[in-house]
Image 1 (cartoon, one colour):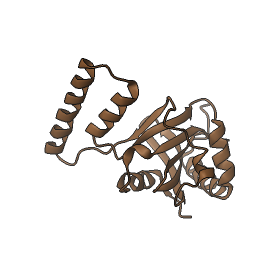
Image 2: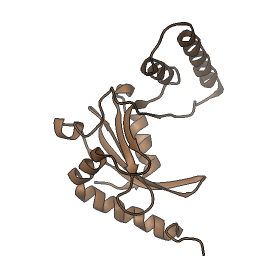
Image 3: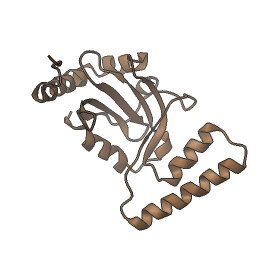
Length: 183
C-alpha cells in the first residue's frame, strides 16, 4: 500500500477510464481526532480511502491510498446503492476557454430541458454531471457529525490501511499544530 497526498488520490480517480456514474462513496468524521474519512469505490477501479482535515478554511490537507483493486461483493456491500439520497461528484476545471464555453452551453441546455419537462432529482443530477463532464459521481452515505455504520465496517475491513493512514495524518496534524486549541 502506497500512502500519498489526498489530491494525488483524487487525480487517480479522475484519470480512471471507467463509467463515471458507477462510483459510490461513504464519508464521515474520523474515529478519533480532527478531520474526515472518505471511501470512494468503483467496480472496475477499486476502492480508495482519503483522510483529510482543514488546516484553515482555505487549506485542506490529507493522505490517502488505493486499498483494493476491485470491489468484490463484501466490499461493495458497504457502499451505498444507487437509490441512496446523498450524492457526490468529483470535478476537474476545464482545460481551456473553449471547453469551458462548451460545458456551459451543455449545462444551460440541460437546465432548460429539465425546467420544461417533468423530471426527477436523480435524472437532473446525472444530466448535469454529464454536461460538465464529471469523471466521478454517484450515491453517497455521509454523516457530517458522526460515522455511518458502513464507514465503520470499511475501517474494520481495512484495519492495517486505517492504522497507517491515521498515523500519517496525525503527523501532518501535529506538524501543522491544528490539534491545539486557542488560549
